[in-house]
Amino acid sequence: MNKFSQFNINTTSKGFEGDKIKMAKILGREIIVHDFKIEDSKCFKDRGTGKCLHLQISMNNEKYIVFTGSCGLIEAIIQISKEDFPFTTMIIKENDRFKFS
Image 1 (cartoon, rainbow, N blue to C red):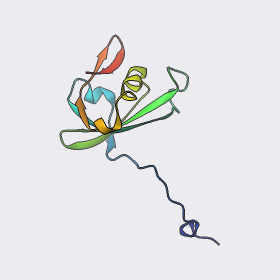
Image 2: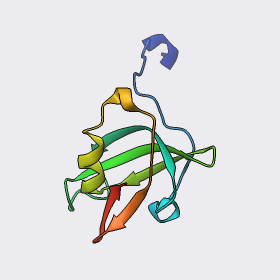
Image 3: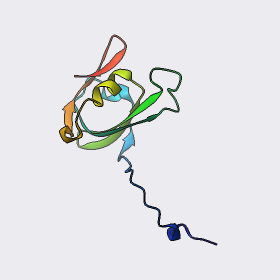
Image 4: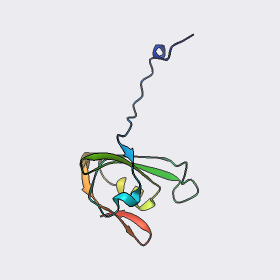
């Protein structure tokens, strides 16, 4: 029987560090956004863009991962150059939509 190590498979995607944190716990608090990725959503496929934004953040020197289907956050973060990461921000809720401020 083959061993997985014989297949010489290398993955290029890196995982994010930290525990999952709910958006409600970080609203209105200063965070550092280190990285992001956008994938097809398992939870939000019938709403918005059908995408899920994964944010690698830190708050109070602890790393966390935030998941959201927010169209506003997705639209904003794809406009930020990867060279501009990390950056500080707050996520606020305005008219039932999340946005960076």
